[in-house]
Amino acid sequence: MTQLILFNVFNGLIIGAFYALMALGLSLILNLSGVINFAHGGFLGIGAYLAFTLMPFVGFWGALILAPLATALLGIVVERVLINRLYGRDPLYSLLLTFGLAYILEDGTRYIWGPSTLPFSVPSWMLSPLSNEFFFLTGYRLFMVVLVIVVVAALFVLLGYTRLGMRIRAGTLDLETVSVLGVNVRILRNLNFGLGIFLAGLAGVLAAGMLGLQPTIGSTLIMPSFVAIIIGGLGSLPGTLIGGLLIGVASGVTTVFWPSASEAVIYVLMGLVLLVRPRGLLGEEGRF
Amino acid sequence: MRLDRRAADAVVWLLLLTMPFWLTWIGGYTALGTRVVVLALAAMSLNFLLGFTGVLSFGHAAYFGLGVYGLGLTIKYLVPSSLAGMAVGVIVGTLAAMIIGALIVRLRGIYFAMVTIAFGQVFYFIAYRWNGVTGGDDGLSGWRRLPVDLGFARIDILNSDYALYYWSLFWFAIAVLIMAALLRSPFGRTLLAIRENERRARFLGIPIDRHIWISWTISCLFVSLAGTLYALLNNFADPHDLRWDQSGDFVIMAVLGGMRNFWGPLIGAAIYVVLQDYISSQTENWMSFIGLLFVLVVMFFPRGLLGVLRRRAAP
Image 1 (cartoon, helix red, strand yellow):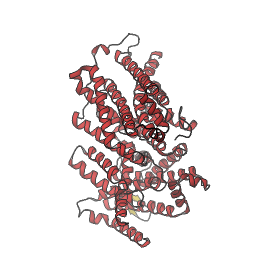
Image 2 (cartoon, rainbow over the protein chains, first blue to last red):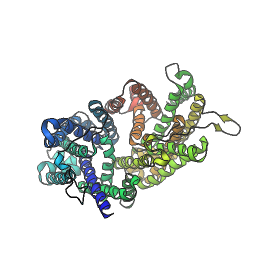
Image 3 (cartoon, helix red, strand yellow):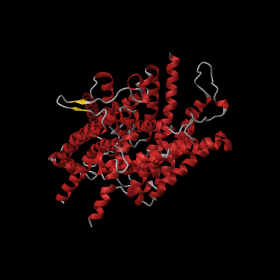
Image 4 (spheres, chains in turn yellow, cyan):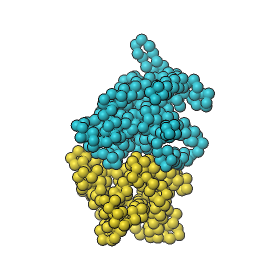
């Protein structure tokens, strides 16, 4: 029993790390641009499939780096051509636009790579369990956790200690002033969008190794990321991170006792948080 | 202007009343007309909140779907009666909306939209996972709509497409007339005031949260009514009726037709339903075309069809 619970908690942490990775990207875009990026799941799918296509040429490690970069590039183009025209307008329009993009991206992956599940092979040494007692602890899972930790740490360093990061944080608080101080806000938002999409692409590659490749891979993962953001509090990246891990573990633990409620439980958790603390765990009062 | 509006109302009702007769001429079929009416009711109910209260909900499919499943489950397991099913569907959908509304009514803007999206998924997962009762991913089948017995008359909506169309139109008319009356009342004017300037309305002493909650509940009540009619039409409950893509479809119908106009969502729903029917019969990649429609509407017709026409006529 202990082992079963431990297994599910660990499983939940991994899933939570995914959610967090995806939700952090969503959160970045939401905070600076006020856009709920519905197409985030679509970009995740593109990242996953690109990794699949690139792998025969550049190997697993190359794909792990190149696929998210290529996805980010696509994101930057999309922002440049479509999304940046909607800043400052009713959020309804950016929601609808990214909603339409989500349809197009999902259908596009289905059109290019086919509707059936494709196998995504990670290096074989990663698949063997590390110890007999904890059979579930394969190298790949451990690697995923480590990678997510590294990436999240890098993200916080970038935001905390670089000029770009400082501008992003400042823009989140008061974009107008940042603009007046001579920062090109158009480019800032553009890069920030690319950064968010990079995280989505990376989450896609990792998810592909764990869940296999399906065109709907993105749309199944996007809703929990919304919940992660709401639980953590809008406007707070650490909150988003905690929210992601929390719902991952919550659904993992629920799987032990009541498997069919494992998806619904995160929404119950969200309801509770909203009831007790409407701004979310780490959200600022009065910002939304 | 006033006369214009009366004339427009008359034309709309006339077209709706005669639809089954001219629809086949232009290549349609009666069930398609019923679909338009039902989905238009859903979009107009959403627009009560979206266009006339200024609150962005992206999760109305949940209450629509509760109507669908409420009716289906009632007919399948409890009472073999279409009317009872409709009553249960509407009550369940409205109650859920009242509870969730109370939780979220203090939130605004994007935050509100996100929370409505997320809450919508609860019911989707319940329908999806509770296999034994709801049929899970395959949907709820093994039941059919039943003729409505009113005591003095019997409406055979099971076998006659016409009867089903007019049955749907009857409920559409009731809902729409109630919403129109509400919008003309002081309550409706208050909603418009909240839409135009919430802070100012608050300073005037209007209890904003309570008004938004009432508007939300009314909107969800009629959306779940539309859901029950949709279930009658399909003889089937599909978990996708509860999902977030369905919510997005309602919003795009409202925007496509023109959300500042009372009849806008009806036009939007008609265009959307016909387009989807046509495209999905032509290509497997209909999702891309629908997605493209979203993008085009947002980029070039943010005011919707009626908004554009009105603007043309104005200067």
